[in-house]
Image (cartoon, rainbow, N blue to C red; front, side, top):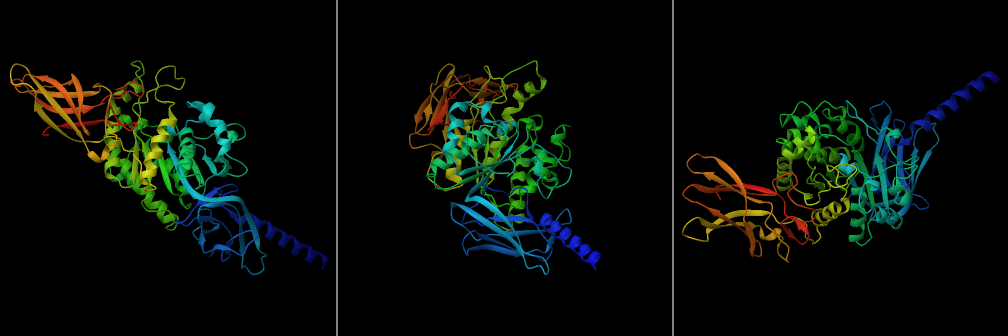
Length: 529
């Protein structure tokens, strides 16, 4: 009898240990996190016993935010659950109670999520320019102590990893912050000091400015998941790439294999409800720039589709997506890759512009007027002016993601017209660059100089082409810049205009055309005009 009772006790104790191990949250949930606010619903998911009932409530109240019954099996064979919470307005902090109950013979189990806010959750992804931390950026002396004043911004950072197959749950050892994967912003967590080690400078500066511009009323959660040196093919599903005819990686580096970062650094996040995403990437794709618009478009669409589906509709199927148009890489003729990048950057930027024009609910920040090739210990490919880039992203987010009145696009070219200034001898011409009226701020265009404008001449006899700099420029209306050039019309015709069509077309803060501190994006337009 005694032996039987002991055996039963051992079995019961073993079962209870198993239950406690099985019932848990997914690794990306923890104390101090931000859950998506109303009007969207937030999601919480994890693992439990088959048939168990999961209830999420607010500690100390009778408020039940959501519940579900476990009826699915996850990738590792353990039953999974996902609770869609009732929509909760921005605010907090809350202590949430997640209870497993309703299994015959098994006592209820409880997990607490402490110090939780409801706000907007933004994902930050890309390669090394997104990965750069505050210690590597300008303004770090101001930004790091400032973080102490923004405790309602919360951070989660994913470490580099890859997988050949889609992963259901993030490996907990690959999350920077411990024991909780989330941490409140302060000088230690934002500054990358032990034990936190790391956070993205541009992601942080974006959130800090956005929080302030929205009246400090909406908590912000940041999920940083970036991998230096990565190509877009690694972040995209095979199916999305196949529609662009892409079946091979841009190079053979491990982090650039098809879908390996989608599988490991995006897919495990899909069940979480988010508000929007930021993207800073493209340098690794300059060797194969031509298909980038197709790849990037399909990546955005597939992320949106999968996030909407796997979060059970709580993430918008057209969630806002902001990105940075690439800056400059300096000039190093002795470095083959940088030399090739410098040659291909104009085309990569053109591909990014195409995406901004045709993919709805996106916003692009131009950054080619922020070169950083002098005394930069990280190389010119890593400009340190992250504050200004993030400021431009914030303007785009306020307009596109939050539908607030602000100027953000910068002047966008609409058309080119030609006008003769003289009628005898070598003809003087005005080449009128007309910008879309709605792309110009109420203050009009600021024309600093004519550098960066080039005009294409075609020899009427030989069809040879040549690009020559404009001789001058003047502002002739609210939205028109008139370029001046000299032309022998018997020999040449004007067949194209381009602007800032080179790796590093202007000095710091000194491109030719701005409107309300936002630079015009580069362009190329060929005849017929």
